Length: 290
Image (cartoon, rainbow, N blue to C red; front, top):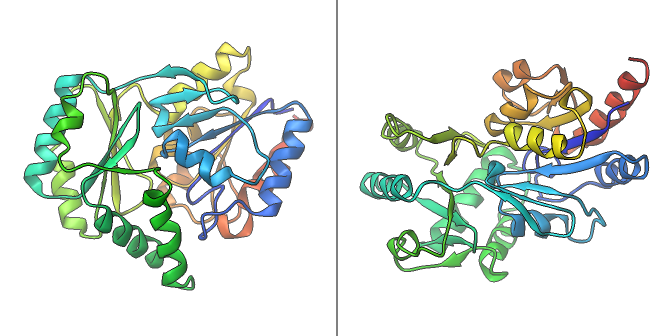
């Protein structure tokens, strides 16, 4: 039987309204009752991950910021892997010179220097994938990142970069201008010690090369005496590949890109159709007859 479940959030556990469906919630609770270790593995900060789980009754460890930070079910940090200081400053200068929008994730907060742009970009991204959702509903949800203090405004990122008490976890770059994203990606060539992935066509996520979901998931499970061979991992995008390639039971969402589906052993339903719940049901059945 599978002994652990690791699920991505956006495009996977969450639907287009950024909510956990009742079917997904029930499947996760059932797995926990069976003694299965459930882990959320996300590009979000821990605070944003918990915000999305609010009201679901799901308490579990979180691999946050693509693996840059790992917290136990009580919310205590048990592992973190930041970018080197000189690398963080180099990334900051390169992205600033290009003129692309980005946010900075640290051990203390997530920061933006343009909250209005942050909200509008999220609206554009969600609408492109879910045109059936009303724009005002998306705006309300996107604005909560700022209103709830999940993302803090700063006038200048350099004060964050220069603050020695802040460990820089991730640069989150996003734009609907794909040529600008490509330019940003190309400009990162030659920087040692970084991993560049994405959680959607409109973004880049830059972390320490050891801060990847699969690496941290395997490390966490090993500390618990569990194996990747008996782990279920489910995701929909490139920042999930490292865990999809390592897990014994890996499922790509039905809404995932074809390249992501090739990285997984199995495919499940779309996030709008509670694909996580279906993956859990299928993996439990497969592992019982293994």
